[in-house]
Image (cartoon, rainbow, N blue to C red; front, side, top):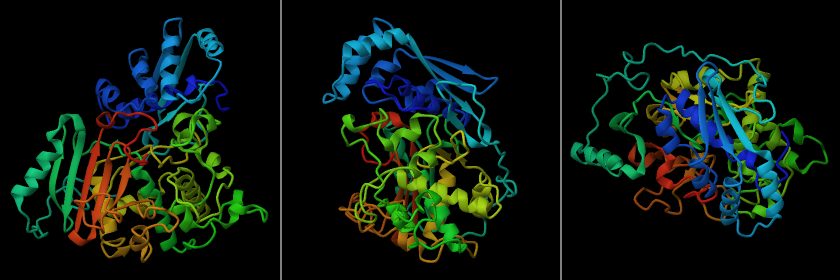
Length: 478
C-alpha cells in the first residue's frame, strides 16, 4: 500500500476506527453501539464530522466490519473545513481537492477478525487479500481457571494470608473509580501483597473480557526482551542484531537493545507534535502502523537515523516495533512457533490463559497499541514485576531487569521514561510514591507498580472520557 499523496488522506480516516470497532465486537464481545460510542478512535476534529455520516455494516459470516463514507457535494466541503480547522498551518489547492473527493464518490475501509490474532485492517485496493501467515489457535496448558486458586487461577486461595487492610477505605477507592460515568472506567483491580483486595467492573463488562489496552503492550514487548536476555540470547548493551542495520556503513548498527528499550534509538519517526507539513504519509510515522495494512516491522526497520543513538529520548513507535522484530526473529531462530511462544513461555507461567495480541497481515504483533487483556491478566503481569521477575520460584525476567526498566533513560530531558514503562521520578503523580512506575496506554490504561507499598493497581477504560482526538492525547502514551 503506497502512502497517500493528496491533501486529505481520506483512505485513512476510517481505517483505525473500523479496526477498533471490529476488535470491540469480536475480541471484547461488546455491543457495536457501545463500542462505536466509546472506543472508536476517530481522526482529530474530523471525527465529529465522520461520526454522523459513516455507514457501518457487520458481516458475521466472515467476521468483517466495514465503514463507508459518502463523498458528495454536501459532505466534501464540510470535510475540508473540518480538516482545515484541525491543521490551520497546512495549505493546499482546496478547490482541486474538493473536486477529487467528489469524483471519488465514496470510501470504504474494512477490518477482519482472525481468531486469536485479533483483528487487522484490510488493504484498500484488495479487501479480500489473503493473510501472509496462518493464524494459530492459542491454547493454554493451565487447568480450569475457576477451580485453580489465585494467582494461577481465579478461585480464592484458602492458604493465602489475608492482607491487613482498611476495608472501608479500599471499598471507597473502588467506588470512586466508577463514580464519574463520564470517566468511562471499565475495570479496576488492586493487588496488595499479591492478593486481590479490590475489584470492580462497569455495567456490561466482566472479569474475563479482553479490553483495549493500547500502549501497555509496549511493556509486554519489553517483558519478552527481558525473557530472552534471561535465556542468554543477547545482552542489554549489545547492538541490536537486526540484519537491516548490519551494513558496516550504516550508523544504525550502533543502536543497542538498551537504547531501543529506553526509546532513544535516534531513528527518524515523526510524531503528532510535528507539523502536518512534514508528514510524508499523511499521518505521523509514529501512527502509520495503526492506519494502514502494512508490514509494521518492515516499515520501522527501514527508518533512517535522525539523531546519534542514545542522545535523544522520544516516545516513538519505531523503537518498540524494532524490538518486536528482534523478538520474532530470535524466537523463530530457536525453531519455536512465534505466535504461540508468549503463551507458552510467559502467560502460562503466571496464570494468564488468554491475552489477545493483534498482528498485521504478516503475523507481526502490533504491541504498540493493538492488544487486549483482562484486568486480572494485567494485574498478574504487574505482580511479575513487583516480584522482580520471579514467579513460583522461576526467574522469568533477567536478573536486575525490574531495576533497569524502572530507572530513567539518560537521553530523556525529563526523567519520566525507563525501559518501556513510565516513571514517577519527576513526581508526575504526586499522590503516588516516587518509586511507582507503570505500563501506560491511551485512554488512561494503567498498570501501576509500587514496590514500596507492595501494590499493583490496574485501571482499564474506554476512550470517550478523554475525547479521542489524534494528537491531543493527555500524554504521549499511545
